[in-house]
Image (cartoon, rainbow, N blue to C red; front, top):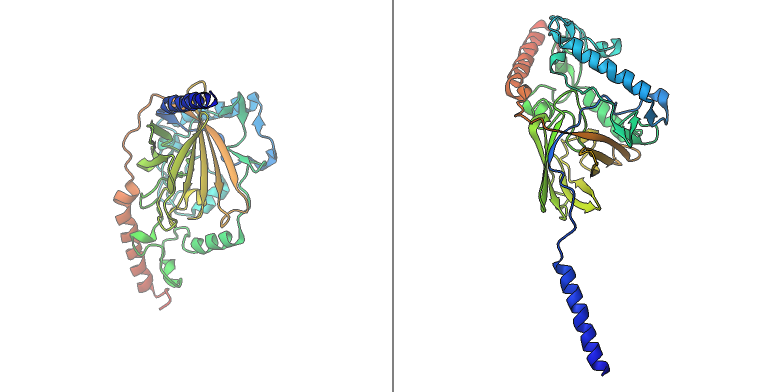
Length: 355
């Protein structure tokens, strides 16, 4: 009799296991859709706010009202902020004196305000208005950089000076900043977006994202420079010697939250100012209203003394994403390099350069 009961118990256990294994996986939220990540909430919190994570509704409304008024006024053709600056002029309306000085005399600026679309909303989490996207460290600001990182930045800045109309780089030892296409920055060559693709941060314009979700992959299309991130679900990272412009992304579900882990960055990518050793963990949580709460943590011991975390809301939208054309790499490249050659010839002919 005991052996009969044992056989029956074994059959029952096997049956239960078989039924459980045949059960469909738990239903996950479908993140597929279009989102707008534009926000006037700053990345870093103003220093005077300290550890104040939230702002009052009155302060949020004041900021949003100012943003709306700026957009409405800037939409008028007569507004000087919408016109290209005059030759030799400074930056468009909206820059303070320090920013104008940084841009340098004679710089006609970049885009005028016609193209700016940074949003008009201060985002909320749990119904409260945030003072910054960064939430850790507690002061809402980037942690200190390592001494090695500061030295690397200082070295790169030696070849990034305001345009004074001369080929000053001829007096600097080593390669010049305009020797060829590869000498220019990644954004100028239109290889990657200007606002960062990993983590994905809001910018002055082109803030839309599109997500396509399947059981095996999640694709995130970023409007800025049409960067497309492909997340392999329940996979593993390749060996460390394989490097990618946007890093290698693998994902998994933790309850209703999609977690994406990204490593293996290309040395020249410098996403969010990080290095090839950066480790990024992102969390995508669909909210009851259809929006997404996007949270990310960056760890890079070669650049920052501690990790930092940010989060903000991507608003669900029916707007489409159109093809992005990066004219810096398409048309301006020739002008940049040709202009550099002309300045070098003038500098040599003037006799001011070091032989």
